Length: 82
Image (cartoon, rainbow, N blue to C red):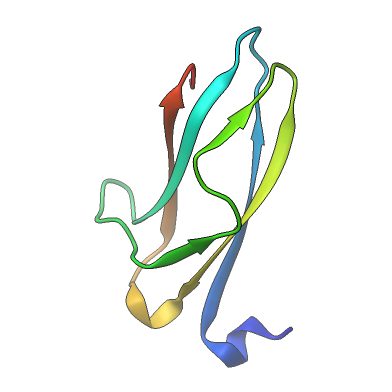
């Protein structure tokens, strides 16, 4: 699909839990530039994910390019997340 034509931004985020404990309620968000406001709406293929030790998962995000200006910056939070 040609995302330039649809005006849609797409990102695939690869999450890995290298630690010995469960990474719980991992939340991803995209911000406008470093320290900027959250881009809304962003449609995630999955949200608030949990990762077992050693587990890796890819999650896709889609947003309308018209809804933001600048470069999207990923922010990740959750329990046992570094």
